[in-house]
Length: 411
Length: 218
Image (tube, rainbow over all chains, first blue to last red; front, side, top):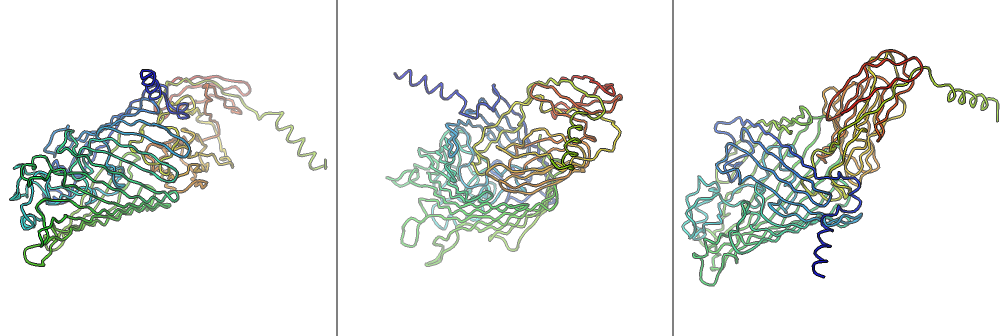
């Protein structure tokens, strides 16, 4: 009986899904394509650190090559792989690999369900599908998807004052190490969500009526994805997004994720009776999209909190580290092939008890950016963009800006 | 039947019975199997952005080829009826459309979600914006050549419009057979075009009445 059941399942899995079968090719199909991004920031030393990512790379690097290899086995099974090659990166190619398998369980008129497993797309918010240069009307990524806070997963601040002393030290080469326990390795700080690296996990995704959903279990967390496999602790992250589509062109989404983010190396530095898995990242997010004729608007807002062992309020009770991040983005097609785009982006840090009695201070420096520019399709595969980014951090007086050009070629 | 009605009926019968003067070019096209949609969607985007329709890969065939006759002396007015490139199941249908220069092409959206239609071919740039199911937009194509049509929202959607200089063109049926009637007698360059394999050309003499044949293989 059990063998028959397994046999039935195998047949079901290998059988093309319902009505789709008639319109798909009989055999497996492989697709190879990619993009080359050539960027030139008009600034000595390249684009500012505010745009730099974990592996030392940046969307403003001079050359970035992204290769895709996709296999469609039948209407149920597909596999997607992509790799980013960036000569400015200080890490190996394997850290740029994303690869996952999709299985379509069913597809009906009013509902569908698929599963994905591997190094899977970020199951939070609405930016991930737009992060590619040919889909992003600007060049940078929103702050909430990459900006490094001063908090680490492998080192603990010894106290509130220790954390406050390290404000603005999100980049690893700026970091002077916390006084608390942890690994001596100086990693970058944790962003709210790190979309440039995906996590190892499993996702169920699909739709029912006007609702779309994704539920995911992952090794790491949104702020500390385990993109190379392995795990940094015994816990898993649960996350999901539910979106409502009231009418075509309008999408309203809500996302949630929760999981332990600290590395197991910190276990020995914790008080007896506590575990690294007790300290979690929890994040709520809301996203909206509106499109009509030549205009598209996007907005996202997310509230994040990290539980940290040594951060306390004036009465000695543990205090969470909160961050509020969000952006508003617009793209308008001015003429055929010519568009203008604008993004206002900010990240605000919650207060913790500071140096003196009653003194409350943001635990990292708030950041604001404006990025705006124009883009032009030279052909349907070549887009040239000219953007300006203005940015301001609370840790420095005044605002800074730079111009950059990017040419993105799809092949 | 009234007298004017009778006259119109007689004229119509004569028009059907007596074809326009000219020969017919017929033949067949053989094609290798091709995957029409080059980029499968890597992201699940939900039914109201992407649909629950059939998934990614379709096989192309002879209907992806346009056969047309070059160098026929005109002028020939474009047809009053608008050719259509329909957006359905996250595809442009047909995948390859042939139109005479000067034709106005309609792009109706039959999906439950938004589509956009744009082309950035030099000389025939247009962007018709985003619009919902049941609505349509149109564009007049004046310049002979290939127009690559895309949807800004669905990067896997792509279609080709071959704009040809005169009404003497055909898209083969599923069996590869085609026929171009009413062609003035003469010797012509007959061209066949496929979006993946480009142009092929044959020189064919078409009788003033009767049939000439030609074949293409891609």
